[in-house]
Image (tube, rainbow, N blue to C red):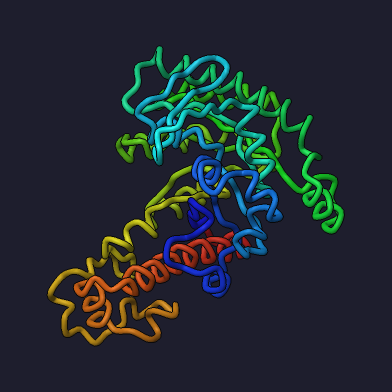
Length: 341
């Protein structure tokens, strides 16, 4: 899932995302809650209508941003009080208020409110966080079941699709880097019962080997007949291996963030387009790529745009990196269907 934090994949219009074959986008509840506000989005028909996107959207709960962007937050059993990174105003997120925001935004998949454990964290800290997340998962589900039918335009969409409910709530497994805590979290989350399950608390500064250990040891504990989602990963090489482990969904800011810094992913490895050696290079960025960038522009031109600080550089770089990631996932799906993964 490309990350469209504030209802926008930076620099790429929705029509081009369509052309690239994007199937689902991720939006961030924390950011949209602060600006333009849930009621604004809700009054305009939900986030899809608001941003002109006709395919599915997943919203995260905002828990990660509350803990990572707010220097002043106060955690309690009820939830977390935090200050906006925009203007310092005081706000409060709980499992109930977070779900109210997600339901109001109208995403197809919404995430339970969890506490994201920092790295490094002691076993005691990771256990306390995991247990809090488990209690919050129950509260999230209870609130969702009681309020999921309260958005009139979403009810209309539900009827059009012929479903009982068009929004789905996923639970999140926590536990830090501790395998036994992850196992317990997975068991407790599955016991509550969700239509999909996610691994959270990764890509928070831990060594990649530890990320891999958590994923490989935890994914088998989650139901194989439900979507299994690893949040915040990974590199092109890693995502193929996660698919091989049984992961169904992933999101990551890496392809878009790296693109803005001139780091491009190709079938021949990473390219830093800032390097002077590309100044007269007439070759396409990736001769094996058929994206709109590689079929039209040379490495020399892309290097010129970046060196000149042209906005188009960020747009084209992002389009290519997204296309590269999407091509990898498409190839993985083909291999699964063919039985050759």
